[in-house]
Length: 399
Image (cartoon, rainbow, N blue to C red; front, top):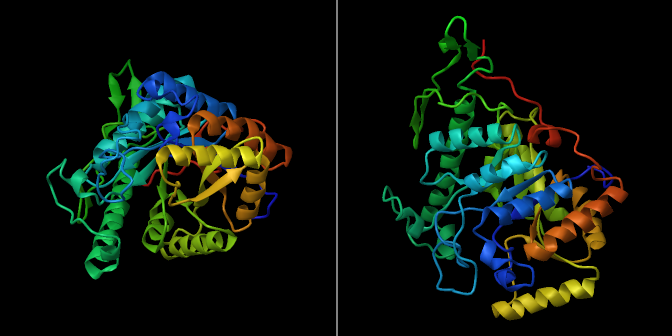
């Protein structure tokens, strides 16, 4: 990709922002975090900036600063609304922006998720996707009681047993995606006849058993929900290293990577493309987005001061799995265009403090990219697949 190629932009929404002290910022609205109006306002603002889509974070346990178990902190936002239900509530209030809630593959059933996302696609008239996530937290496994996970230290993840568990989680996620896709195709597009005169509502010959048999799932099908408006809502996933890179290349439509520079981004893209080719998907579109946490202001000094103030409130410097950019929207535009030369199709930005940084993205960054000729000046499609350049796929079961 050349630095002048059009870019896609998404925003990752999580509570009051990605910094743990963001809820204490002016304009954070902490008393409204569990209201529909709060989320509607955020997505409406993102759509005002002509962003491609928003993602909604979710989990099976309270937020934690520890990757695999709860912590004892009481100074950060705890608790979430259900991401799919939030997206469905917001969908009728928007017209163009894509809605991508988080779905946790571990412990949940793909049949339930398939009809929930299909329903979201209907409610949004073709703007649904999902961000698939896995979890190895023992406390979350305890909510379901079907299996137990060991409490592993970071070093233990590099042992043979730790690597086996990690690979199993992503192999399960790959099967989860396969079941979703088969269920979405289990109704042909014209399976519903709706002929009042003859009394035939449905053509049973155009509903199909998916007959999936795997290590983790056995699903007969068909779905109870007709094929979604997009045919296949977009499947996205966050990937930090080789095993999840293979999931993106082999199963997903969009992968979010966390590069620390152009060379790092280029290596991640190359590994995903290799996995895509190995899975026989070389001819299919798979987008790679870069994830960044952003603290933006009218001057770099103001952005640095605000981030330092948040760090003081939290009692320690903020760190993230993704790179952190602190500066102006114009400086971020420079950085994104540079990273895009590594083959990234777009970026998913995580606002450090949503109350401030989301508007810096929509009213600062997006216009700056537009002035440079690398971002849209109007929505050019009515579906999420259309916005991102994905064709509507044929149904695998149709004759």
